[in-house]
Image (tube, rainbow, N blue to C red; front, top):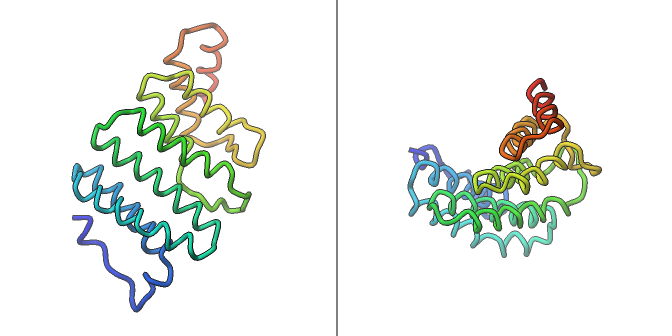
Length: 182
């Protein structure tokens, strides 16, 4: 179904802009195929995305190179998750994506729109690592860098869930209640 919606751009646009058409296209198709249960198709699109990484890097554009690497690691995590291939490998791929994103220069609007930290936090929650998830969600909301987003719903919900999964204390319950009211 998803493949039927995909069409090539006119002319040689896809050759001239491998990030915009190739990387993003294969990222989206790998994620969609994985969520639709088509492992073979998701792996093929991930492989196609990876084949474009040297071409994007050769362009000399550091921003597109970093965004392509983030897309690769995030798509890898999605495909691994879809294959039920172990949470540690999913977490490792997302940690790599977050590491790249956190070292990118500030830009407004943000150039990386993938919620990599929030995906990492959710993967940690799914793996039963609530304390580690808290350490991802809290700086996503309250960190001292331009990456902090105090009203990010994904991070708010993730922090609340990570606190709920840990041992209850009066302070923790109060924080959970405060997060639930936001």
